[in-house]
Length: 269
Figure: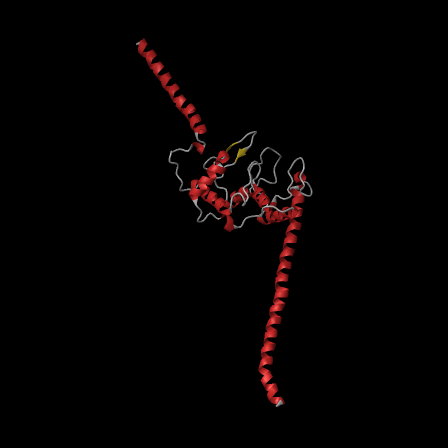
């Protein structure tokens, strides 16, 4: 009887042992794999911050302070976020050649890996807008007509209705948006660089930002045509009026001189 009982318990014991083995394997994976991955990510982030701090000390601290607190030559960078750093440095605006009312775009001096390290360090100083993903700024499938409406309501006052830029007060200006990458347009809307107001996702959702990007790509694309002919910079009555004064008035003066000269000849003869 004892042998029969032992044989009856044997299959159940095998199942229990198998379940315990599976549980132990899953437990070990759950205990060690995610923790190892998290630790690796944390180490990589720490290294990026450390390298970014070194780059900051060489190229940025003289204006923005040793700890990003700002100075008389540059604003505080605490809380501006990684998106602001990526925009300013990726477009060559920073480091600035000299302080001024507006920092112009110029050739980029850092590699993208270094820009990422700078962004990681600045982000560690205080929470702020983060660099957007390609999914956020990719205009594929966006509503171009809606983007045009949003752009005219929120951006055309400074950038012109096709994004060709315009003059502001005290030597400031809204830059031309033709040829600017979707990523940088998105970051500019997100962070509000220099004289531009910011449009966080709470004010302008990601979908609306993508619609604006799609509109700008459409009106400034190679297939875009001007229904009025020569755009004259797309500045409306300013450039059109100047064109009229210079060429129109010049043509009238030339005709008047020609008529006067021929009239004088006719009287002499």
